[in-house]
Image (tube, rainbow, N blue to C red):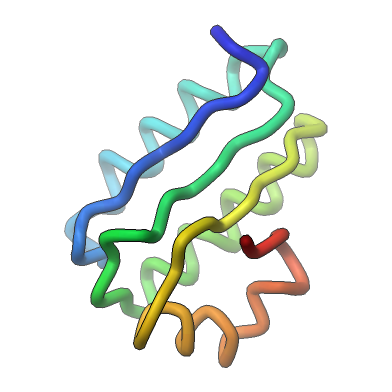
Length: 94
């Protein structure tokens, strides 16, 4: 696997995505060559508190593995929610 990988999110990032998002993250973080994980928010129009929880868990697991996570492309309401939730304290936001 490459040192840099991107997860592209659908327009709704909510509890219905929990299983697939968590599984994908676990699989990627299991690879010791991964150094940078980008989460592509460019299509996200809606996210809920469970999505924020998934991101917090990802931050903890990624930190333990020495992986940097960047949230990219957030706009509109999704960007506002990430800002209100202080996600910039856990992730680089680009």
